[in-house]
Structure formats: structure tokens, C-alpha cells
Length: 212
Image 1 (cartoon, one colour):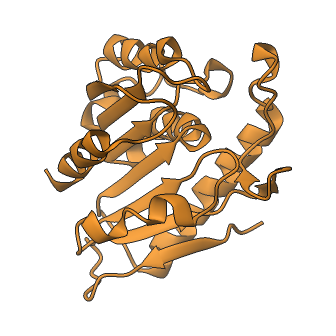
Image 2: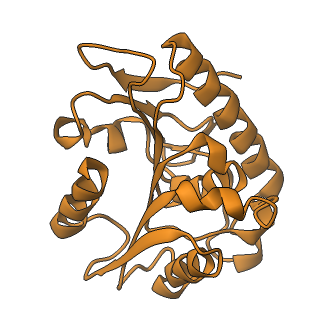
């Protein structure tokens, strides 16, 4: 399976051109985070994926969830399948543009952020900057992170969460900061006075993170 996606290409592409992969949340689509493009660095390739599964609300998802049952908040086989597809497609797209030794960045919101944690911590060699928005680290899909502890040093994380998030509780988001601290990762954790979303201050801080 190949994922559908939107792409913004810079005017000039070299083997060292940075690329940013974006993963939307449950029930959304590839256009959501792609709306960030106007304020992202103009010399980056930006790729926003569409998740492979449809939801009852006409959007898309990376895996099925049951909001009423914390034990079923993630379908582990579906999540692992999505991770495998993402890795293959990211490598294929990078190869298509002839990228080599270039920075590869990652940004995920909510369900896409859960997968971003798993991708970055399990495959740290692939990424540089990682933005996690309104998400949490799901232990059930974190693989080999202890073996990768030394490799995690080069990653830079921006983690944000709304204090009034009714979908993914703020305490779950704090678990991400605790995990990154325990793994000796470089990260910034920001709390914002909003619900399950990104307010203006959060957006500005995110753009500053990518521009540095």
C-alpha cells in the first residue's frame, strides 16, 4: 500500500534539502497540517500524508480507536501496520528526490503524534526535529527504544499539549515529557490554555522550533 499525500516542493532541491513529513489526527486528512506550509521554511520539501483507514465521520485514521475504553484506545496491529507503511513511503519519497544525508523532520498531531513518538524513538537514525502535538507515547508500539538510547541524542523534540484537552488528557501528554527526560533526549514541553487543538501561541512556538 502507498499512502496518498500532498507535497510542497521548494524551487531548488539538492541531496541535502530538508524534508518534513506530517501526520494528521483521527478523523482528519492530509489537508489539515498542510495548512502550515505558508509559514514553514521555504527551502524544505513538505509532505503531508493521508491515513489509510476511513472513519465513520468521513475523515481518515491511522488505526481504530474506542474513546470509551482506555484499553482499546489503540488497535496495536493496525498501528504497527501504519508504522511499517510510513517508513517505507518516507524512504521511497526521499529516494525519489535523491535526498542523502539531509535533515528529515517529523510533525504529528494527536493520533499522528502517537505514531510520531513511535517512529522517532524506534528509528532515531531517520529523523532530526520531531514535533508532537496533543499526543502521548504509546508503550504498546514503542520498539527497541532502550537499544537506541545513544542514537536518541541527535533528536530534537517539541512537545505541546492543551491543559483542557478532553480527548487525550494533559497527564497523558506529560508522560511524553517524562519519557523523553528519562531517555536523556533534548526536548521542549509546552502547555497551552486550550483543548484538543493548536492555538495561535502554540503555532508560533512550533514555527520557531522548525526555523531554529
